[in-house]
Image 1 (cartoon, rainbow, N blue to C red):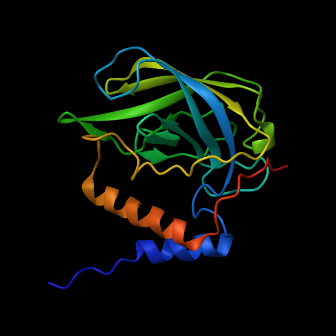
Image 2: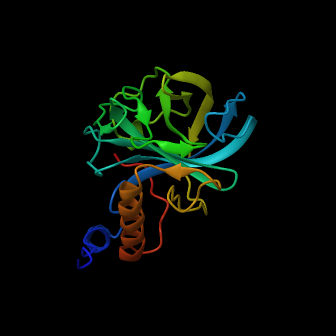
Image 3: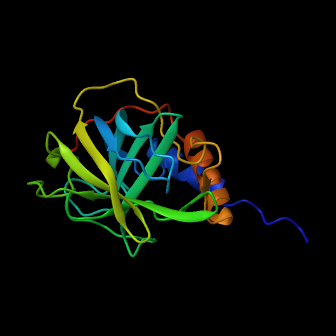
Length: 212
């Protein structure tokens, strides 16, 4: 049987080239913050308080305050790049109207020690009035949960940045702890090709400023 041609990487390369930005989540703001985790064997999260850098972003890149599938990505030691998006019923991406009105989830589960585990970040209520990057408050707090069943395991505090910084490109497919898998395997292969196409299609990453 002939191999199925790879259409994912070329498609994402073309989209990234047309935008001269990431194919998905092209609009964003970097943040500094901390992750505080109590011991939980469900995932290899670092215990105690860990300094992190990350990015809050709009999945489709809708302008201004229009709703979008919002992204929350951050780098843990290892490195382990975690990417969460506003979602419904664990696996369905869901546009959110504000940065605090949606539940951020891993969409697809992790495979760790023979089990499938989801990770989520539940935002604290705040006064952000839209999905505009300019509406981000000075600080955002999230409760980190693993499931299922869902249970809290820690906190993430993010402080969005307004100035350019030399910050790392986040890639949850390439950067993860040894032994931690992404499921299902077919989706992992598709994501790997999508990230590769997006990297090859765009110029070196700028750190984007807040939109209006």
